[in-house]
Length: 232
Image (cartoon, rainbow, N blue to C red; front, side, top):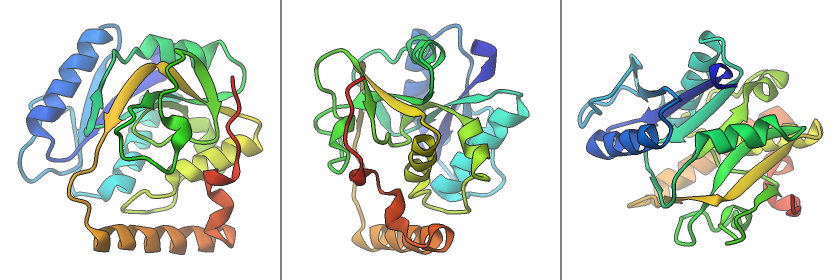
């Protein structure tokens, strides 16, 4: 399955932190080639960049660029990683691939989140300390292996600078196709957004509502809060 997986870190001004993440993940997963897609960083660039965007397209555009790179390499599965995660335990790509390969109907595999991560609205992503693989309603696009054919099935993600709603939309269509999203409690990552700007957060929410109200009539149809957690 390795040849069907495209591994990429989406980076913007990550510099040394991105390089440290890249080196750690590469050491843990020597059989996988990891690319770094730089989203037109004006400064503090990684020294391991392999793909460079001509202009900054935001998180949403960066995700779409990673998907396009995956397809251009002839790969079906994208192992997408944001540059601002901190691995708390070893992140094992082979384990993620095996969960995807040997379980029917899996659309996405993700590590769990540490208790102090900034995702209080998705409690099912927090590590349950069981060391198990759990089926969940949704997983944020932080460090995940997913099947791009799901995205093709609904015509691709809409243009969005923030990318807010992409993970909801993916989960919505995965459920409609009886596909599952899995969180692995044996792997833990930490994600903390620093210096949150209320105005920027409001702009992202307005963008999400505008895009998905237009696409689905009501953006709330996509919200993962509506779905209960199911044990794998």
